[in-house]
Amino acid sequence: MAKNKKDEKLSAVNENKSSSKLLVVMLSVLIPLLAISAVFLIIAKFTDVNVFDKAKELSGNLPFAEDEKEAENENDLILEERVVTLQAELKEKESQLVKIQSEVQVSVEENRLLIEKQEELQYEIEVLKVEKDSTKRAFAEIVSTFEKMSAKSAAPILTEMADEEAMRILNTMKPDVLAAILEKMTPVDAARYTTLMTN
Image 1 (cartoon, rainbow, N blue to C red):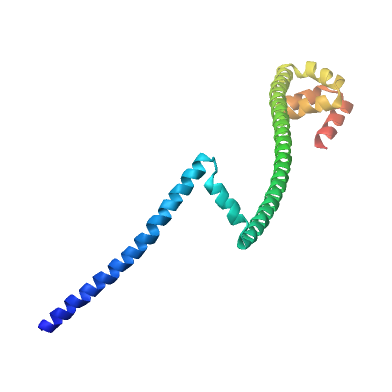
Image 2: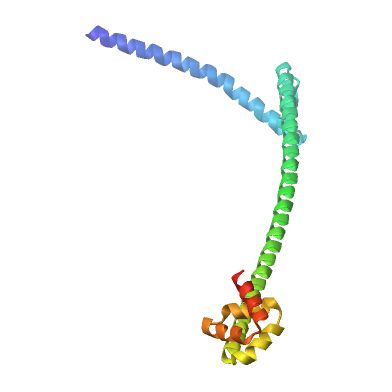
């Protein structure tokens, strides 16, 4: 067991020696590199040289950088073509939109005209209804007047009227008043009106 402890200590010492050698090598390389870099950066600062731009230029001259430039140029061309295509599509959509807007405007105008025409027709219908009602009332009053007149007075007036008007009045009269008026007409007129009423 004592031997194992010795072996462990010996291996730990060997590891410490190897890690310290590595540390010495790294420090001996790293510190001078950092010092040289610092000196170059100070010189570049005083000479107004942009180190990053120079590094870009130098890296652009490398052979694999040219492939990257070509790939960038191809990508730029593809993007430009895509932009041109999208702009053409946008113009086409805008023209379609203008066309649709004009069609909608025409449709709205047609609808407005149709609504105005419908309102005019509705007004005319209302006027005709009012006229019809007043005509009916006036006609009813005329019929009522003839019914109130004596048959002797009404018969000559009806025979002097146009057949259509006389027939309208006679067709609306009460049967007993109609009979009395037909009795007071000449047989020829009474026969004519009777025939017209049956037809």
